[in-house]
Length: 331
Image 1 (cartoon, rainbow, N blue to C red):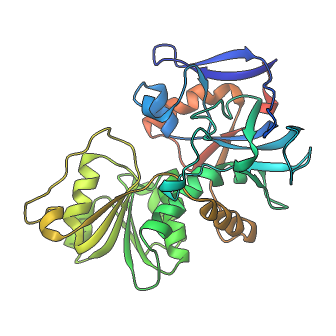
Image 2 (image 1 turned 45 degrees about the horizontal axis):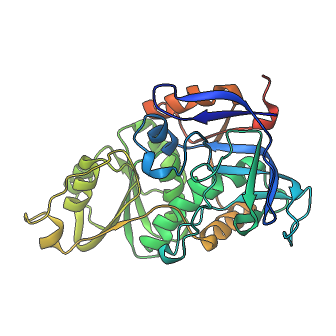
């Protein structure tokens, strides 16, 4: 048996359960989870607003996963027992999304001591990289990399605004700076500005209106919040013909300006929704981590603190990326 936090409905939230250790099929492997990132999107699921994200109930959540292979399916090749691996969340290109292969979303995930995963999403962890770094690379880093590099097109000469300096936004800001863009950060919490500037942000503001008042103009704005107020402000602020990349999931529905003078129609603004990443995004991120070019801010919590940590994430009182090691559960 293994310990796992299972979700079935918002009334009961995450429930600690004793579950059977799963058995891999011919195409899968059994992994002992050594690191599971705790993601803000799980807040939406646990609160009952994320049923569209998950394929079954009850489900063991946790989609940022890294660990050690303990058992191989008979058709698995290229991997061995004892290999350190992480699990890709492949959502790009959209036409090639792998149906049913999303750990912690379509099958039981990392908030348990063991997980079974298909070979097609396994990625070897580079030598010298921690399980925690590899786990958060799959979503917190790869998702922000895809949004900022793949969709926003970060490059020298581009002026970019990053709205929301949380777990994804701060990493996105780092990627944009590494690509040579002129980057400005935005967050209601000014305490985050020093860190953002240390990563290369030219300046930071509490609102896009403040940047406009300062005479700044943006080729592209990436909204890592996803509230009507932030997306609308991004559309009003971006240059005519510019792009707004939406990543954050704060609101199920957003209201945006359309046919006004500052609306996306008359301004010719391109709005792009960005979720997840490609295998190349993940490999690029792992390479940057291995070289020390990007350094995620990681905080470890005990396995039994996962439910409380999700509450803190929902309250916005968590900085950086939080992770846990289910293999060290003390129950």
